[in-house]
Amino acid sequence: MKKSNSGAADPAYQVGYGKPPKANQFPKGRTGNPKGKRRGEENLISVFKRHVLKRVKINDGEKVRTITLAEAVILKNYNAALQKNPFAMSNIYRLAEDAGEFVDFTDAKQVGRPIAVPEKMTTEEFLAEHGVTRSSEIS
Image (cartoon, rainbow, N blue to C red; front, side, top):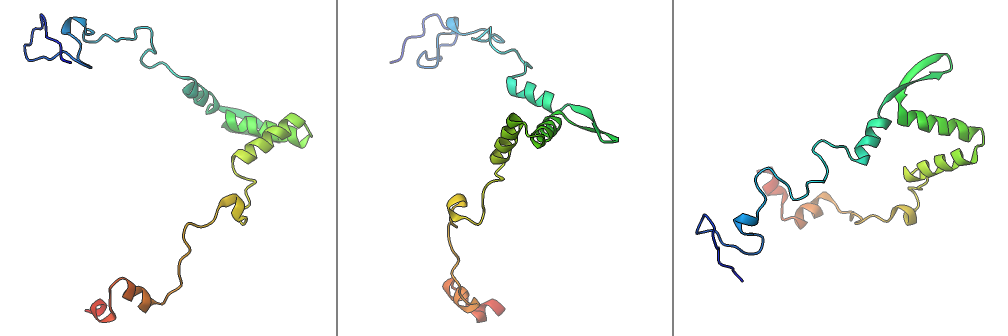
């Protein structure tokens, strides 16, 4: 149902669904959610990525190496798991499982079956099936 455009500056402007009267529209440069996320503000994922990608120095025996914080956390868990820490072992197993390290690629139940099994055929049979003959192939 169309409403009449009372007091609109443009007589061709039709008020309706998704087209409020000009007097009720937000002014240019103003949002309908003034307390919303500010431009350039980081969300939780970007803050997390920024922190885990920081480079840290670790002592690896006699050498000092620089690795990311995420790698340092994984190494610390790995070393604690080798010392039989049950929480660290659980973390390492969960990480390996999420990475797909426990999937047996030879077991069809775990990885699935192939979508299509190719049929064995000779070159002549293949060409004949697709409408190509040897004489038209040469010329």
